Structures are given as structure tokens and as C-alpha cells.
Length: 196
Image (cartoon, rainbow, N blue to C red; front, side):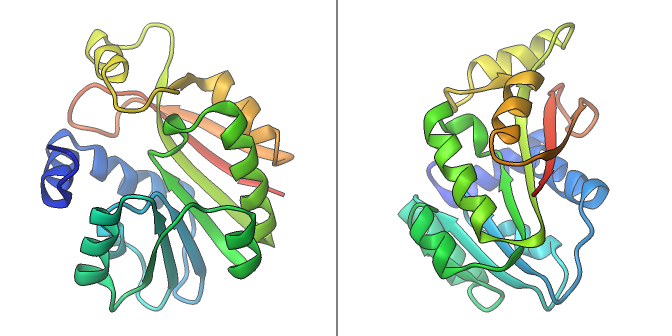
């Protein structure tokens, strides 16, 4: 069901997960119209409705259906690429102000993620920022939140320390916070802001 862009977005909206992305971006990022933003794991592109007008937006996703939908619906607002973000992409799109990964880290193994994070470090401008948001295990969390995490499509959901140490493998400055008040259903989010 979640392979269909409209149904995927409906699920994200119903649980408040998409709203959590918007709240986290508002609370932890300062975006200006002239910024260059790369969105890795952009999905069907709905986040563009909630970003400032005038940004230079580039989305990456490996799902052809999502990318095709994003191009049809939001191609007038940004560019979308159906490819992995790797070292070649980092060289091609160098100078980004912000890289976003909303709900992506928990789909990537440690070794692959370290390679991806190294490429992200290279694509960012000297004062650029990596913004991440993912589901997170933590002690004392709601049983509903834990059940949702246990049954997520991602196979690499981590606790706070797990995300923190992976981000630190590529970035010397990492601020990672835990929020459990962002969605309609009980859920725990790890929000990371990482800089060179």
C-alpha cells in the first residue's frame, strides 16, 4: 500500500508523521529563500509545499514511482533524480547549504550509511547543515511507539547513541535531540543537526 505515493502520503498525514517533519524543520532549521537544499529520500515531494519559495531544491530517491509523481506534481518547484546519493552526486551538486534526510537513516545499514554520510559531508558548503529525522528506540517509551518501530519498513532503527555515533563518524558537530510530542500517535523521533 505504501508504494503508492498518494496512499503513502495519506498514511504519513493520518499518523502525524509528515506533520512531525514540518515541525522539526521549523524548530531546528533556519531556511532562507536563496538556499540550496538537497533532500535525500525525498519520496513524492510533498515537503516542497512547506519550504520557502525561491529555494534551489534537489530531491533524490531510488523509488521510480515516487520520483515520477514528484516530477509531475512539484517539478515546477524543484528537480528530482531517481538515483542513489553517492560520491559522484556529491561532486556534481557541491555547495549545498542544507541536506535533509527525513525518515531515511533507519533504512540504511551502518556501513552503507557511513559511506553516504561521507558523501554528504563533501556536498555541503563549509557552513552547511545535515538535518535528519528518524524513529528512535528509547527506554520508557510508549508501547505503541515501540510496536510501530518494531513493525516499520526500516530494518536499522537505532537508539539515540546509535544515531549519534554514526553522525559523529562524519561530522565533528552533532546536536541530536529526542522528541515524543510531534505526531498524533505515540512515537519517538531522533532529530539530528550535524555540521562540519
